[in-house]
Length: 49
Length: 249
Image 1 (cartoon, chains in turn yellow, brown):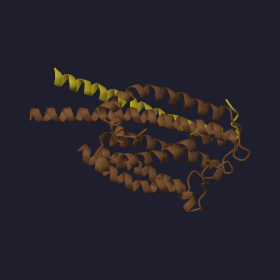
Image 2 (image 1 turned 180 degrees about the vertical axis):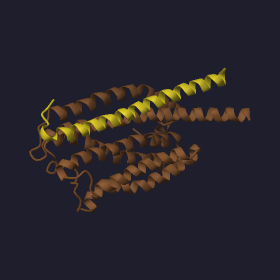
Image 3 (image 1 turned 180 degrees about the horizontal axis):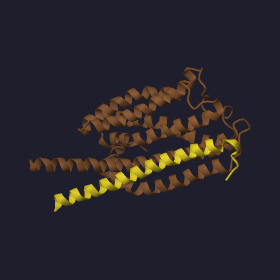
Image 4 (image 1 turned 30 degrees about the vertical axis):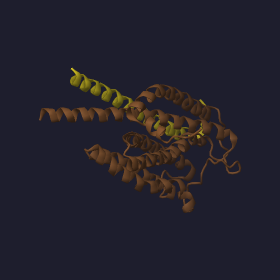
């Protein structure tokens, strides 16, 4: 860990907020993809079955 | 070698798009993860403090790429919305829809990291400075664009309305980019990165910044491909559900 001196709080807060927002974006994208893929598979099975 | 314009539209055909992105997405996602982590590790751990800004210079590696992406994602949405308006190409407008939440997140990251950086450097988290204000308006345009998609049930009407909103919002995307040149009374400095070696930051900051920008761009491409694939599937699901409803009525 580099020595961030008196600005440690500011730098870590900026990186922390960025990681939280990007993680939420990636998680939401993957979760919706999985949900829609499953729903489409079920709908197609209904139509074909 | 002749260039055939029709081949571009062929790649954006929904079936073909799903086929080629199925192969491309894992490669882009892995590349994005590697470049993104490499850029941030280089910038955070292996660059010196600035003689004036101290360690806060490390915020540069997330703030600048996020701000660049915030503006350029809106530009991408403008192009894809225009394609929808002119050619009624579904994949293009679904790509614009998919890009919006990524753009909103990038704008929010730019605003938050800018505020956190601004406090020790300017003595304030926020100032009604031209660039800060135009970025806040750009953020609100992203939110409005996404809300409009949710508010209109018919997907084609939603695509028309959001495309027009995208054209209007482009004024603020341009303002966000050039605000510091139009009005020079603000706190925010001009462009930090430029192709002009005279104006640029020192190489020790410039190279890791380039890697971070590449990481953010690749992350955007991976996410927009994933989300566009989801939107194509969602549209197919919507069509099946409508057909079922009509049959059951």
